[in-house]
Image 1 (spheres, rainbow, N blue to C red):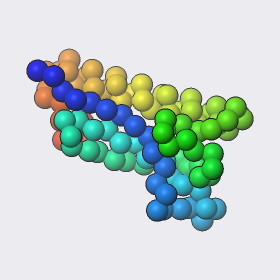
Image 2: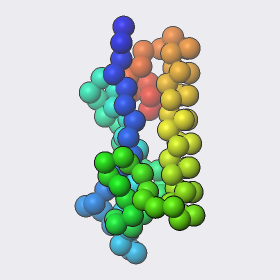
Image 3: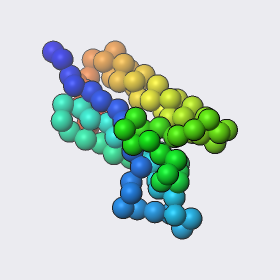
Length: 97
């Protein structure tokens, strides 16, 4: 049985911090059902590449943020494998647990 599983990061343009930055969110989609959560990071709108869900540039800040995003993505996929190993059904509810 195949499960459609996708992970993406996006900056919410309709919400801004006091400094005018955009909060970055993680979205996990499992068979069409979505789960969104903040990753407690933010970025200036002109430094975000929405198409690939990453920070723009080679500055130290961009490298650190992109490394953090890679680590979060790895944790998400590791958790997906953990759910499969436990024999549970992969869906948004089991993922939130």
